[in-house]
Length: 287
Image (cartoon, rainbow, N blue to C red; front, side):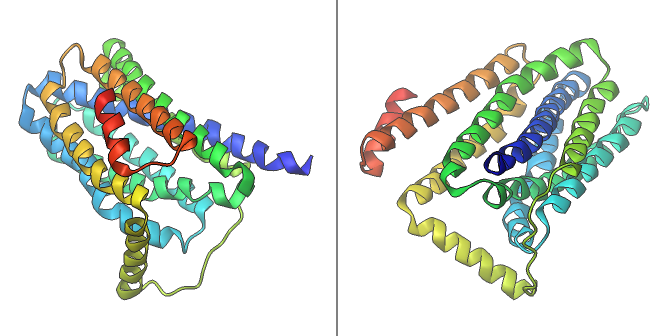
């Protein structure tokens, strides 16, 4: 019975975080659709995309260093609460007859900062709860959950913005974040708070150590370098086609393609060990 206690604990986390990520992804997509319909400006969408992604991209690596020193459960709860607070403020802003773009950009940026602390904290929870022999399986399930949110999010966001006002759609993000916080209240996550100093030199040293660990692994370095072009591509073409009737279908197909590639890569490494060049050839042929 004790052996399955970790599973019960992680199920609470899975359910709460799944609903939170699904609602967050749907709301983010709905905001893009709404801005494209209301402003009819590619520049507005570009600024919104920058505000929604750049803070997380910049702060994320440094946030991970601090999360290693903080309580993971408390960090996730505070991050979810912060994101819910930003969503509530955005509801108030969007109820106005005037579109306050600077405030929308600011709130999208603050929401991105909250995600910068939430995502690594969630990833750091699994090793504290899951037995070592189950970590690979749990990591696979986490990928499935992220894939489902990536596929279903655009569809839900499009459906919601079709029948509801944007202020009501954003409430989905509030409810999802609150549900995630409540689910964390009922679970125990071991605390590994450290007393390490958090000076800028120590943070930079830990960040450099983590980067060296990634670069020392051929597989991780391949994903690290090849992931940047994919991220930049998505950031560029999403604003360009926002508002197009096929955007939801395009993102859904892209997520299906990504997860199919993951499956092919996992089967490739499971059956045989090969060079990075061969892996690139397989992925290129699939695409």
